[in-house]
Image (cartoon, rainbow, N blue to C red; front, side, top):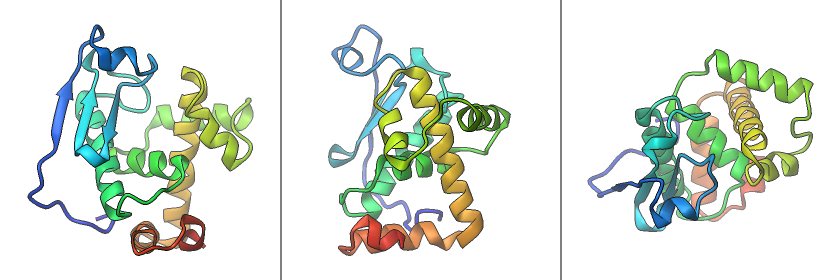
Length: 170
């Protein structure tokens, strides 16, 4: 409902990969899973759970499934990573005390100061990625509180029909 789309009868492949797999060797150690939207595939590393922002294998699966649904909503068109990760984090679970603490530390400490910094944090080390997850989820939660629940679905729908993210977001 948050994303403005419904599940259909399409198949999603879920791969549970071990730490010794080639899939694990190509992913940073802090990544506990990822979605390959064009292949409708989710790759999970159970031995890396729980790791922030996902506290359980179930939450991780919901987070990665949200990525697939976000990609479907925008028709495979690009959206900024902070928006994608923030939405997936918000869609997968409730905002908890760990999120609040990480958000506070990012705001008080050396957290991202610009949207570019926020996106770059996902490419950094474990701490930088955790800060970017917390900040992006907090920002998306703020946007929903400020502009209403339909804001997300409307933005994704506009991107899906050909608008740039910047125009759809505005």
